Length: 115
Image (cartoon, rainbow, N blue to C red; front, side, top):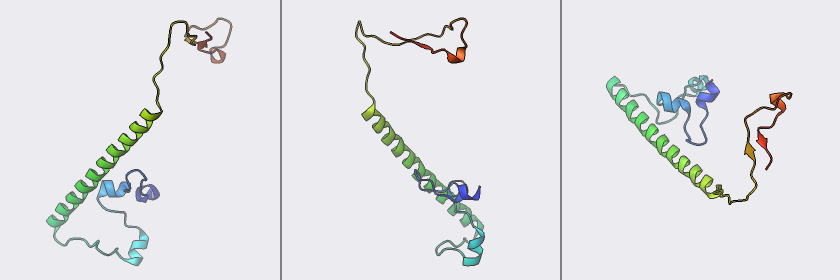
């Protein structure tokens, strides 16, 4: 679980720990090496809570923007590839048939009938 929570996701570029906890996980190696520069804890509890809420709001706003952007990208890619299918009178099409033939296993029967 630690690997999942500390791994940055490609689409949103944040770790689940940052999204849920507001900060990156502190691993045992951090005890040996110390905190990264600029990541000191505030001494006042109320200022820490305010700072924490601001960080979470900022991260969530950025993630929402990234997800909206990625949704638009996927929609545009799908629209570029998708094509409308139109049939004319006399075209041969496959028929979806849900009735089973007696004497055969349903697993081996095709639900589509030839034109």
